Image 1 (cartoon, rainbow, N blue to C red):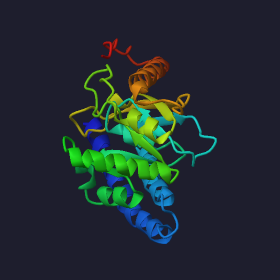
Image 2 (tube, rainbow, N blue to C red; image 1 turned 120 degrees about the horizontal axis):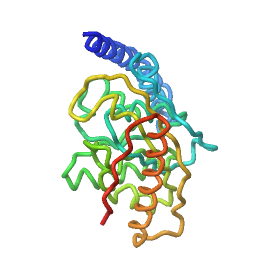
Image 3 (cartoon, one colour; image 1 turned 180 degrees about the horizontal axis):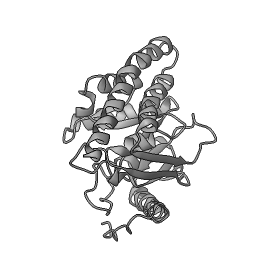
Image 4 (tube, rainbow, N blue to C red; image 1 turned 120 degrees about the vertical axis):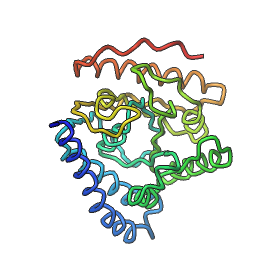
Amino acid sequence: MIGTVLNWWAWVETVVCVLIGTPIVAIVYAFTAPFDKGRYAAGRAFRLVAVCATRINGLWSFHTRGRLADPRRPYVVVANHESYADVFLISCFPWEMKWLSKDTMFKIPCMGWMMQMAGDVKLVRGNRDSTLDAIAQCRDRLAKRVSVMIFPEGTRSRTSEMLPFKDGAFRLAIESGAPILPIAVAGTRNAMAKGTFRFLRSRALAEMLEPIETKGMTMADIGTLKQMTRERIDAGRRRLSAELGLPKCATDSAET
């Protein structure tokens, strides 16, 4: 009973943050869009809505580690994906990045409007034209000195084992010359598990790992870059899981 009440209260708090945040993001967008071509200010305002919702959620204790020396240096940011709560947690990093998100997220009232004003990138899964357009938009954001955030697993894993990484983020990084910025996430699986929107009590950590330069790499290096990044994130999430006292992560199968 108490858990149900806390869940509903967390949802009320989140909805209130979104309703209050939408006009604020709209105002920031209206005043900055003419000169802020990368929509950095509007995007940061949107991300702060998620930060606010996270901070007042009494069920969550979320923390991040790491800070960029130059937040306007563009990176292709990649992270493991445990649950919807990853979005709230990663948004707490103190810099702006545009998110590659499935098209259904853009259809949510208020949330979708803010994503569009923030300059996030829409992707229709299984649609080749949408994929090509999304890649072009990601290149555009990087060219405007704003990082791009991609979950290379493509979807949330149902278990503690990471799914295989897809090539897209690593191809984008090599083509654009942008470094890969790995982020390890642990603890969010318990906050909002796949297949449910129920808020649960959780402690979670996200840590920025050592960037990986891509200058000089070619398309032949995609596999190596992908594997290097995956191993770095896997080691990071295991270390964070141990720190949080979570069950040991499953041993990932070798990637082909």
